[in-house]
Image (cartoon, rainbow, N blue to C red; front, side):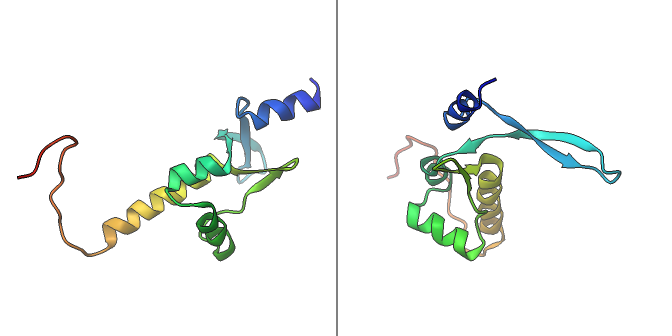
Amino acid sequence: MRVDWCLEQALNNTVKAKEVQMDNNGTEKVGHPIELIRLRDVERILGVGKSTIYSQVQSGKLPKPVKVGASTRWARHEVEAVALHYLAERKNRKGPNLPVREHGSESA
């Protein structure tokens, strides 16, 4: 397989690599699929802008991206783990218990 074709497919997010981990015996085992995503995907998942993302990378709240050629990518599962962490923090914060409205319902 040509390397340039593999890189092109990876940059188009159509090829997923498998994460390789080592178990306690030093044997490789395959984990969940890794998908490298673009900045705009990170913005969408976290609901924040570019400057906030890079600020969170600097402060260690968000994992560092990886470089693929000249492109910058994040591992989707790491970004989603951060989003889940933010949701868990919300549950632990004290605040008013607001009623949840269903989408499309009218309030009087």
